[in-house]
Image (cartoon, rainbow over all chains, first blue to last red):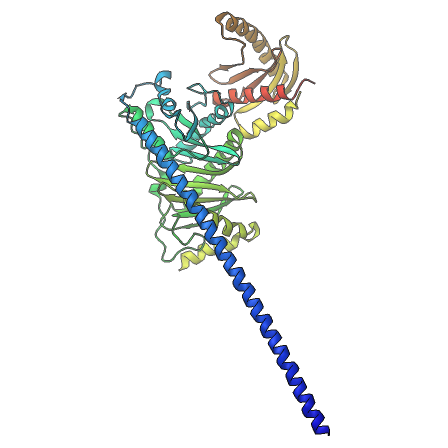
Length: 339
Length: 120
């Protein structure tokens, strides 16, 4: 009798165990299915986001092409010899070529002393053009060789600054873009097309002091090779640095005080910048990107377009490293040099 | 009128070429001054009041309309004066070697902000 009860109890326990097992199994399946669904949703979101970015990039590229074609057309007008002094009539030729183009909201020329050389009704642009009084000396001393600046601002049209040829005595063209920044290369075409024989290619410090190519990819940099060098600036000092054949550390360190000063002046004359992009005539650029905690990320690269996604990824990585663990970033640098 | 001290502090923070500023009226009364000593204020007012009067007349005769701003550029220092409301004006004084464009822009900006801030 006792044996029968034991067997019955054993069978009963077995059935319960099997039932629990099946329940757990089903729950596991349900969880897996939920995870699969979540993965699928993430993949779908990612695909939709990629599609949206592709469409945006295409649209931007089309706009740039249209703007460049229009400006190239403006640059192909009959040209006179470059004048020997910056007369008002000659200086007016630059903004006059750009007004009316779809990508240009307004353009003005500012002299080296920050006074406007051409009339403009837009008070905000007139104020923004005053930056030239600071930009010129900074590009002579701390940021040598840069001839272009693009200021991206939150909720306001971007501004593009371009140094004009020598005969203008250090004047800059200042252009407010409509919706997006005016393509700097297109502006160069328009500037070169205004007069004959006015090329202006100052020497660039970035080209002279290059870091040796590293044996392995540095950790601080993005792995897709979007940038040649990157640095983190905190309290006006360069606290982290990495390069793949980009400017050497001392070249970057030399530029940091100039960049900090420039960011301060831009804030005063144009409003808080989202990014500052400096261009030299050799197709190289430097982007200053303030982070929310007072630090700033500096990246250097070459080519017409800055890889915005790579920049955002790098910003995210640097943002995760707190100010107190700057040493951690320096470790990357040590790791990079050691490898 | 908006707080001149706070406004000038904001200007000096962004434009190291600015030494100080003062607000005065067409009878030479000084409403406020920042970053200037008594002697400097006296000299600036002694120059700016008749200068404004003369320029007002000249611009009216030439058909230029109301005078908005003017820049006095010396070999060592520069002074920018902008009209606030036809009676009062703001003068921005630059440090030695300051670029004139930024001084003029900041005087225009200060005048606009003081005008928008209303009369005391």
